[in-house]
Length: 539
Image (tube, rainbow, N blue to C red):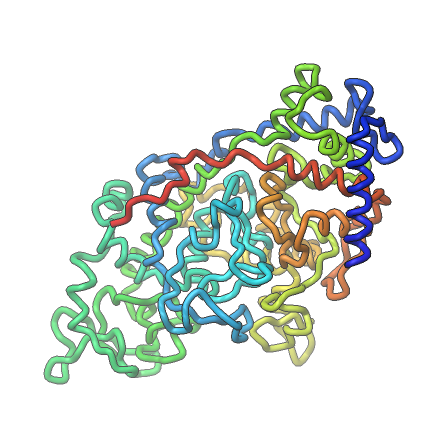
């Protein structure tokens, strides 16, 4: 690493000397081009123009009919910033391994919301963990935090593609023990207590199912471990304002119609008071119609957040301004970007081949690729961490292990698409406002072994200078490291699967590596409007 950094710095020094002397320096990339084309071919110029001008409005979202409702957007912004939906900190990773620190001591409220892991000052990404390889919420996630800026332009969401809409991602993150660690009953009660009128005004056809406030129940519920969250019995009987239930195991319980905490358990049916089920299986012991009504509140919560995140669209970058000058015929006289960045742009669409995957104005092809990055970091599971029968299971099908892999996190998109295919909140689900949507059919119907192990969604490079560290595991600290990785094309030792055929050495000079970094730094965009980013006044 030290030798790599020294060579890079020497290359940068040489570039600086050439540039300051106003030499053509053609041997190291031609930064001071003597003519307008700067050596670009017509094809290269066309490819550069095709990268500029990200739309200022998010694409249509038929699966969310509230996507462009300004009232839903305002409510979603409040939800995005409000940390009261979160549950307790657990300081665990995806394999239930204890982590060295958390946002709060284990057992105390994590106090996190969407905004906690998507900082506007870091381009909408999360720099919370040290050295920043993953995101830290109630626990430690298994991947680097992605930016929410421009996220409405993606087909699939999250690094491994396990959600096909922003609202489905918000639904999942609400109850994910590593992110906000909330639960749908708590979410519904927070909305009932704090946002009832605004929620009802937007979602009038699916109103909140519970009356009153959560405070009216506080003194009526047991707090002992065996019956926490259940109604206190009156004379040994379930009081009239509560409902008796009988578990599938024969155990009995006494619950409010809408308990204050709860989400679906791992075992189907009601196991009242079972400590292995979330909150004593409070949610699964509700009437089926009430379960559906509460789940609808969670889905609407996600759709409101989706509406807000669709407004997190960045403005133009220096690169966009340079392309405008290029189209006007004075691109190489333009001072919008440096001479080094101009040469980096040519490399990006030419010799380095970066735009083969980082194309379109999003700088992403919206596809899945294995680019030689393994599994590096404190909370990032390796295949060796995932034996048969474990929380993360990457073991093959055998007579002793007939179920095969399950939750094999290191496999990236192969695991993510498996989860997408089982996701109850897809664009084509009953929770969608366009259940006939077939736009993600190629993933929903894909045979899993056609998805490369170790593949991940191509991230946008807009604002990339602000969103380090890089790659799905955050293992590359700087843009220089990223360029070096692609230039040398040496797969990580713990890489699952095989890298894509296009992952091969580029044979760049140090000066050319430097030029590519300069180009990527020119992709820093104007942030979303100040009123979009400004924290709302919360109730």
